[in-house]
Image 1 (cartoon, rainbow over the protein chains, first blue to last red):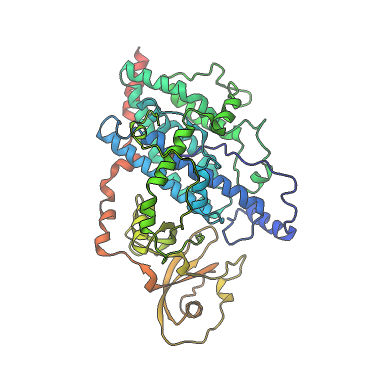
Image 2 (cartoon, rainbow over the protein chains, first blue to last red):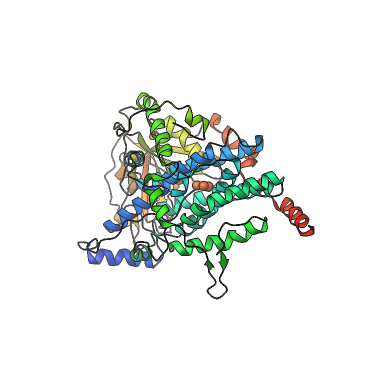
Length: 328
Length: 200
Ligand SMILES: [Fe+2]
Ligand SMILES: [Fe+2]
Ligand SMILES: [Fe+2]
């Protein structure tokens, strides 16, 4: 699971000064040729910094994203759904592991990343700050939030940083199960009783605004990322990703007879893109900065897990092994 | 904490939001996977673990839950001796120089990176007295006609290999169909639903 719309830091104009122009040109030529950058290759400081930030946010999103779905494991309807949801949540946590490893190759330790998460310094996908009231909310996440994540992940898998791309290839292979499982759940709700249909419609109404936020602020107001696009750190604009998601999934939602709570949502036949009501970016900012319905709960759960697991880590720790930056 | 999740509501409050106490981290271990009989072991990624045995268990969890796998091995990252990464048409073996043979030979596993952006693959074993000598012996015995971008040498004695009793996990992978996309075919249900709604 992964929220796009990474919050990239604004890039200051002096961040590339001081880089060796010859090395920078070689680095850019390698990316231009479609080759991957490996951890031991030279890279600009700005590339390293923004990649760490992006991969780390992605990893946190997998870990935090496991919480709103994980809460439904014990209450999933029936044994089969429980098994599947358990496997899916386990996958998401595994994705976190793979992504932390990829970020570590850039020189930030996993411990530092976990610290930054539980101290509120690092961000994660905003959508997981919303609660899952019913089983239908959980199904919305499994199908549509994962669908959004897949749009991002498939694009990012073609990026320039080798370890991140390899982690994403592995992740995308598992996501196909998540997507099919999620769609399966929603088909069953859609073709069930009126009460089941209403339950999913209500979930859809709740989750649509955060789903539109998921891909990040509109291109009109987001920070300039041209250099990150050139370096294949960011693989598409937020609006492009959002549009791709709408293209693929709005017809599938309509097919099931559900309505989407946006009267302005329609495909513009002239531009070939979707028109929609501009999402409330003030709300997005407010929630990402900590004031959403579940922000404090999400972090507190991680903090408690960290504290309650400490004795285990201490008991297992030996002086014989040593933390070193992973190789690839 | 008041939560929709009963398990969260039951958690004891920690009552403090002070930063986590720094804890020395676990070691870093590299994981290699053999997908099929006759295929080489390939580097897959890393795990963190307090010891080699735990690293092996975690590696199974992290890397072999889905794809076919018949064997894995793990070793501490610091046991991996890494040659320079080369570029263009430069071969990593061109930088390997002759090392005087020393006594006290040990076995080393040798890995090649044949394409930038891909992962290292196991190519064979050599006997040598040091890592440097292992690279030299490999250049004599294991260098093929394909260009090699990077070479790894790992002491065989530092590797946790797969034992007979470890195989259960992979033998039962086929039974765990509920984790495959193919187990969630909603097409028929969807079709009959659409037909029903079309009639109404
Ligand atoms: Fe995921
Ligand atoms: Fe997900
Ligand atoms: Fe997922």
